[in-house]
Structure formats: structure tokens, C-alpha cells
Length: 286
Length: 344
Ligand SMILES: Nc1ncnc2c1ncn2[C@@H]1O[C@H](COP(=O)(O)OP(=O)(O)OP(=O)(O)O)[C@@H](O)[C@H]1O
Ligand SMILES: [Mg+2]
Image (tube, rainbow over all chains, first blue to last red):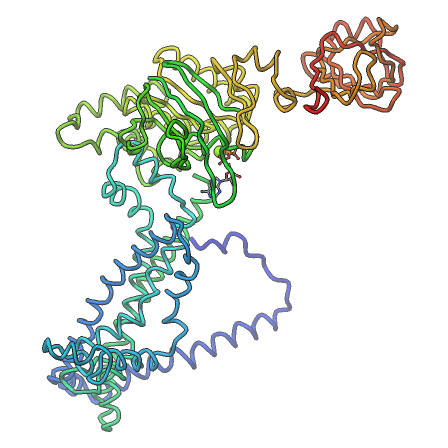
């Protein structure tokens, strides 16, 4: 399925070079990726299934899982919507400052998550620009759940847009024009023509976005102030437990987070094969 | 339905894509827009369809597009009911051929939408028309270029458009398929009499298919006329040059002409002979003979070092017994003269 397969050339490097390189790569992957991941699961279950279950049934642990899922469940759809809008605006219209806008969308990639968190505090903290206004409405953002969600949204902004922009750029808008000339309304055109053409890229972006949303530590840590059972997400709770020398519980929660990530990874590689396959079809110039 | 374009301009940034373009296509007519790449053909077509807006002009009579003498500036693309076939097909690749063709019927508002059975019948009919019965379940990727092109045409025809706009519909196909589709299109047009504008950069296609030809160059219309008119009475140097190969003589090389004017003579308008015919005959030497084709192409180098192509019918070539290096005379039987403006 992968497009490189058909073009790969058997290398003429000596056998020992091949073995050395393959061995080195495998060694690295094992030492740096597989072993640590394995250790997490090993440590999680080392004290027996009972300790594991106990760690998971802890009220604070469950609240952390719930908050992580909540932040993900809010930021992913918001991002999807924003990504679609941004990709549509930058590929179908021409306006001043378009390329600047595309670069700005990438900003969260470049900025350290810690700084992102600090920016949120400066804006929405009690002494921040909008802090007192928000407080007069009884809304606390920083050191509360909205802050966690906002921080997650900030760091995941580029994911969907980044996936969609190149795909939509390549496709141009001829199919949309064709639909409109056949009498389709804007909404019909979007649902029947645009969406099916970008669905794989969209899904891919959403998966990357969810992985990042679940794993985010830095920005969330700054705005949450680690109130257990209230503003701790999974990564924060794991960190807190570990600092309490409660390694079994920390590893139990880690195994949950790792499983979520592995699931996303599996879904992602399945999608990659699909996208690859489709882009090969595209070469036929349709 | 007639389509009229009145003194339309279009600029992209600082680039002029259309400059003072006026054109009237009569009801039921098939007009070809002919011009080199980048001359503004697609831009003009998109403007008629409503996908591009003409530049605004102070004069309210300028920059207008009229369908049947009605200004359509405020009409949306779908209100204009044009069938548009795109240069690169633009088929919906995730839909079957059947669904592609049915699209225009399915998206109609509930009240006007035909029933499923009616849609089915209509698509069947169209598949028959484009000679692709039994291809309804295929996807665009499983079709050849020529088949895709026909599906694109059927999809546009499904909405029974008032005007058919075809952007280089046969552009990406090989010569043989082009020829067949061209004849098919002409027959189709004779059946349906839909007002049609066909964009092409192939002069042969334009001359063969169209009732009238519009020759475009660098954002402007050079000439509008029947195929005979533009071929035999070209209005400019560009037109004669673009409509087939031509030999160019500068005025000085011919006694009948003075000044800076240029003389254009097509290869078949030159007579080749062993002896001088009259004072316009030019002497030269045969350099090359290409015998493949209906007539032979003889390349002659004149005494003042100009390369000239003469098309000679095969039987004449044999009776002349021409060979490489042979001294010959070429005599124009017909010539098109264009003087630069400043000498007039
Ligand atoms: N959206 C646009 N923005 C900027 N320039 C454009 C745009 N559309 C067209 N142009 C320019 O306008 C000119 C005419 O383009 P157009 O597509 O009408 O040419 P064409 O005659 O159809 O050529 P071809 O035979 O290659 O299709 C070209 O120089 C093109 O680069
Ligand atoms: Mg074009």
C-alpha cells in the first residue's frame, strides 16, 4: 500500500552496513520507545491488578480522566470548525495578509506551551486584562476548568487547519464551481462535494489534535494550579502522584493515557495508508 | 438564448486578463473561442457563467453581460443555468458516473426535484447519448480521459442548460479521440441547438466545429467571423499566423510592395515550378522534402536566405521530379499584406 514500496531500490551497500544500520535503528527504537512504554505497563501491573483497580477507582483519578476527556471533547470540535473555516478562507478566497494569517495559525507550534499558559493568565487572570470583567459575571477562567480548556484549545489550534490547507489548495475549487453551476446551494456544495473530498485529511487532523489535547502538560499546568479532583488533567494528576512517591498509582494512570495514545496511533497509521492510497489515485489528474 | 458581452474588462491585480471584450452569440449558435494559452479564454467563459465579476466601469453601458438582452450582473451562477464543462473535467470523484450526472437534478429544491424514477430515466437517456450505457456504476477514476469528458458533458446537459460553456473539452485527449468527439459534439449541437461557446486553442477544431470563430490574443479579441472569413480574410498578422503555418516575406523582398509591410503566404498558396512564372517569382533551392501526409511539404531556401515551406500535392510532386538541391521558383498565388500602422 505504501507508495515508497514500488520505487524502493535494493541498496548495494555491503551486508554488514545494512545489518549495522538496521540493528542501530531497532536498538534506538527499543531503548527509547518500546522499553519505556513497556515499563509503564509493567510498573502499572507489578503490584497486582488490585492495586491497579484501586488506583483507578480513586475519585481524583477519575476526575482527572473526566477533565482530560472534557477538554478534548471541547477543543477537538472547536478546532475542527476553526480548521475548516481557516482552510476554506485561505484556499478559496484571496485577501490581503493571507500568507501572514497562515503563518499565524502555526504560532502555537513555535511558542513554548509554558508561555502560552502565562499569556492566558495575563489575559484572564484575576489581575489580568479581562479578569475583573469576567469575575463580575461570576466566571473564573484561570485556576479553573475553563482555563484548562482554553489552554488545550490554544496548543491544538494548528492541527486541523494544517492538514486541510494543502489538500484543499491542491484540489482547487473547480469541483465546487461545477456543483454551483449545476444549481447546488452553498451548503449542498459543502456537504456533497467539499466534505467528501477532504474527509480523510480532516479525520487525520482530528486524530492528531486529540492526541495532543489529551497529552498536553505545559500550558495546562500553568493555568490549572494543580487542584486535585478539580483542575488536574490526566498528565497533571500523573505528575502529582509521582511527586507524592505514589508510583503504582502514577503508572496505572500512565497506562491509561498511553493506551489512549496508542489507539490514536493505530487509527493514524490506518488512515495514513488510506490517504497514501488516495493521493496515488490523484496522480491520474482528475 | 443569446449571450452578449459588452466592453468587458478584467484585471487580476495589475494584470489585464480581458481588455474591452465585446461579443454577441446568437441563440442556437456554436461559437469557438480560439487563442493561445493565457489569452483570457477561460476568464471570459467564467465571467459569462458568473464565476468571475467584470471590472466596474464608470460608463454604465460598459462591462455588462446580457442573456437574451437582460443584464445578468445580479444573477448568481446557479440562476444563470449554464452548463459548464471544465478544462480538467472537475468530475466528483467520490461519486459514480450515475450520481455525477444525476447531481444537478438531485440538488433541486424539493418542489422542483424530479422523482427518483424520473431521475433514473433521465440519466439513462444521457448515458445513452454519450455512448456510455453500462458505465453508470463506475467511478471517474475508472474511466479513460475521453469517457470522463463525455460524463462531464452529460452532467452539464442534465440540467437542460440555456447556454453550454465548454472549456477546452477535448484538450487532454489524443488526436484521434478528439476528432471523433468533435464530430459527435457537432451532431449533438445540431440535434439540440443549445447556444454553445467552445473554448479551444486548436485552430483546426475551431474551424471545423464552429458556426463562428472568435480569435483572442493577449486579453483582446482580434477577429470574429465565420471559419471561412477568419481563415481566408484574416484581420491581423496574429490571426493568419495562429490559424495554420504561414510564410512571412518582408516587403522589400517583393517588387510589388514597398516599405516595411509584411507579406503572409500560406504553404498551399505558393506555386512551385522549374521556371520563373512572372515578376513575383522568387528563386531558391530545395532543401528538404517531407512526403508523409496528403500533400508533400517542400522546404525551399530562397536566394536571399529565407526558409519557405511549400505544400505540393503528391501527383504534382512526382511530375516535377523534385530533388534535394534542385533550383526552383516559387510564386505566390495569393497573399495577405499587413502594413504596420505608421506607414499608412
Ligand atoms: N484568479 C486569477 N488570478 C490571477 N491571474 C489570473 C487568474 N485567473 C487567470 N489569471 C491570468 O489571466 C490570464 C488569462 O488566463 P486564462 O485562464 O483566461 O487563459 P486561457 O486563455 O484560458 O489559457 P489556457 O489555454 O492556458 O487555458 C493568464 O495570464 C492568467 O495567469
Ligand atoms: Mg483556459
